[in-house]
Length: 65
Image 1 (cartoon, rainbow, N blue to C red):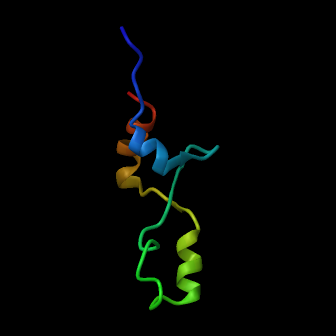
Image 2 (image 1 turned 30 degrees about the horizontal axis):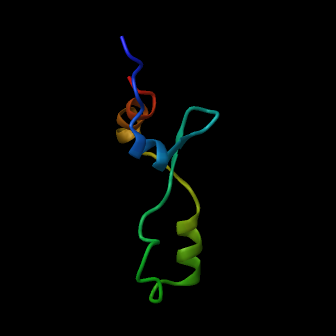
């Protein structure tokens, strides 16, 4: 039987931490940046964590199972 493949779109968007949590990038940082404050844009650059509700679904996509 062939190997399971991870979801390539998810693999590019999420990273696993050493503790088993899943890091993600934040939204709203791609365009219309002139009206957003410097502080807001800087905070959007930082990584966030996937919520508990979505954790299982994202993990399943990353671990191909």
